[in-house]
Length: 433
Image 1 (cartoon, one colour):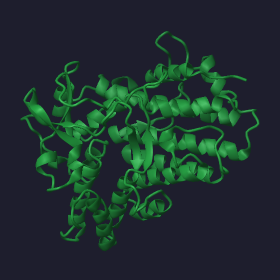
Image 2: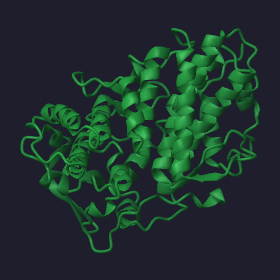
Image 3: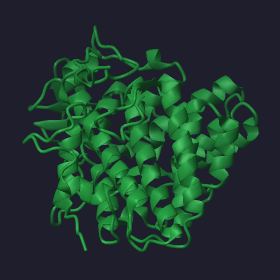
Image 4: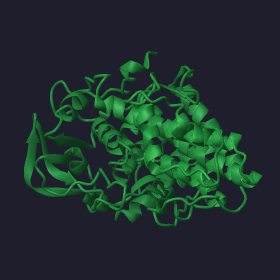
């Protein structure tokens, strides 16, 4: 039986960072033995390694993506002695299309997509004794994860490649609306496979998928992710239907959901978004309006911790450290119940404002706030929902995307003359559109 070691999965990651040339740094082709052993005939022993590789790769450079999106959303600034471009290029919006804050997230997300495509090809070509239900369930998982990674790219860039299964014949770039439509279609297809996938997977998932580690459970994650995509598309009727089939729970734990997990064991990695408090060399410092705009007694402000002394850099001043993750093995959410409840409120804000307010109050009350007492117009509820999302999902890569999709980027604060918030991050220069 062929067994693919995790090292080979990492090789695939490196390979896809050179998306156009499709070769490893050492010149080894993407069609080498480690890739063809997966795609040509996926064995029962290789499938768990392939799925594990995709899930692992989804975490790569997650810190770069979250940091850039959080800076652009004016949630926090990242000050690091190793690279002043976070406080320079990213804050000013003067983005270089050939540097790390553009290329790293793009390359890592497409590396995970590449690994998923190889495993999907292997399922198509397998001669192993998988049952039809096992193949369907596996395909449903892989396409859901692939759709998530495509969405992460679409959240950054205005146009992306959807079809990248053949590295020698990459599909065209498509605009943002078409990309979201394609991602939604992929999730719907994955949901059909999960529905036909029997009662168990022929592999194990990480602890971050606890409660979602069967086809029926994973389907609820799929529906939640699709609801996010449909909210981005403004299809609120679909959002409500999808949320009803997801794990949304108005009386449940707001933290319930799917997570990226980290550890210090073996070849695993630590949470790269963790920083100890009161550091000087590397600081994620909260943008001041997060504190000044907060309502009294809002417990979500605890995600910001007052520093022993202010941090200053290039005219930016931070009195508070970001402290969302309090250890280097803390899990990072992919999607969780609190977001779903706020998506439910958003989907109802025009058609059923009373229901929207009930959902808003679930989140407000959990944060120690009283019920919403403002106007129940669509405009007022939109502002309230965006406000609640700002505090509930702080530092989770939502604020910039939210303000863009509602046409409100001009409301984000700039602390220095000449700073600006772009609508999108450039496509890497070597993509040769």
